[in-house]
Image (cartoon, rainbow, N blue to C red; front, side, top):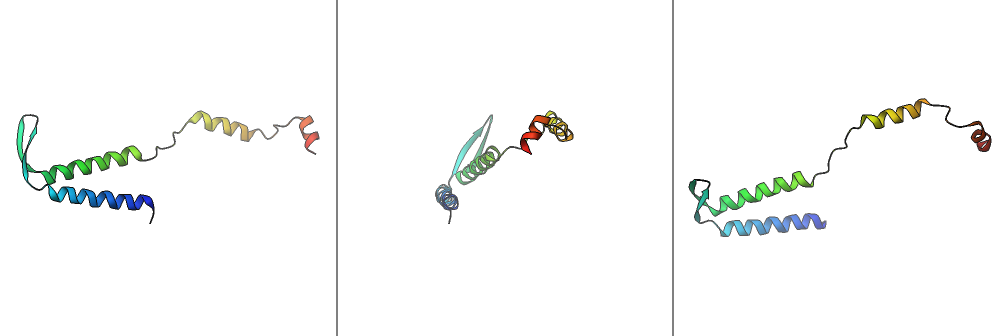
Length: 92
């Protein structure tokens, strides 16, 4: 098993233990409202939101398209005669 897989399993087990130990109801105040919610629901909600944010922040970005770069390489490819006569003599 890789280290990353073992770390994910460890965090999942730890999260499960913590969530299962906190099942009693508490008052949850959100702006002007009060809710009686289980700690389990709050902890799971925070864990899921944190996971989603972590995935969004940790994913690699897309390569940005720059039209200027493409036109430069196209112009270079179209120029078949880029060597001087002196360079051709040296190569041959």
